[in-house]
Length: 389
Figure 1: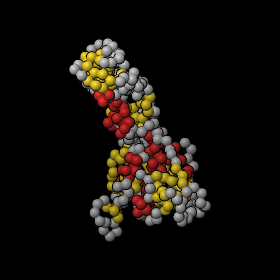
Figure 2: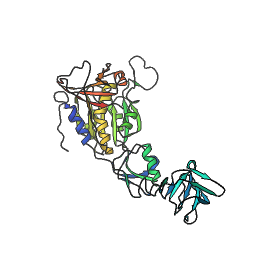
Figure 3: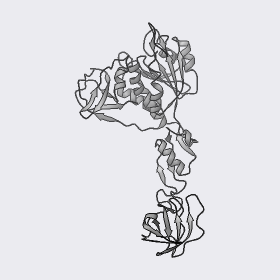
Figure 4: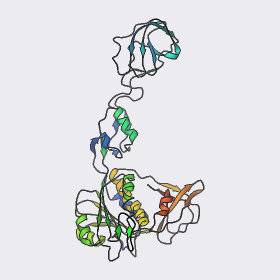
């Protein structure tokens, strides 16, 4: 892939271009068969076919009597769901008592429900409608039918369907593994932060965001400031994507770009013209994994994760991109050069800004259900709305 490099200060990559680069930087992971119970949250790598018909044989749809010919009928047996089938076909004038889901004997023309039958000593009578209350083999799902196409998400209901159709394993694209690196000597991870310290607010939201985008966090590692620890962590193997939180700007404690250069990484995105979240980055390490560099400010990190990380994870899982647009209600000001990501709530009058959208605070994003993508020079036209996890 040809990558156009930009000076991160003078000519930062546009937000739209950065998102396209992130989505196009990967190919879907190879298909693997996994036990069905482990496939939840993955996407099918091939069509899901019915290994059996549903129902597998002609079965009763009601509790009552399976009858042959015209009534009255002589009772010759009973058939229960999961029990032994009635031996041989029914002759005209014969009936068996039958439970819902039980196999209907050959020769039966209908099932007469209890409430429409009159039972006597060894006989039964009632109104019969030929074919009524019998579910024929394959009536719901024929054997061999494709019930879900490749790319369909494996939901809890899809797992139930697969089990009903005889599947123990499913061919899926695995969820990409994500290693999270939290950097910063000033960052604390429990309790109230002291003077000069800040509580980590990025690490707690990343696992949910990664899962929402189709991946899974394999480990979260807390690193001190300095290039050596970051260099060692990025040299490891085992993850499809590494997320570095902090260390992505130009300050004295920001070592990500220097470490990437030392490792020989191919930098795909180096700064994005977006507010918040300008100092974000995307690179590929020589041994394969992507590195997504997120700013240290929590709301800026969220915006960067939705710009670079989520599209890359969807590309790895083969998830098609969907886009929503809407009108904005309320006072929104565009930036002359940069795209703005504005927390909004959808309302009947349009997407309303909720405020509280400074880079260091997640308050506005927590109140919102989407981020409005306000392009440079926006003048009231509909905008894209990015759903929040």
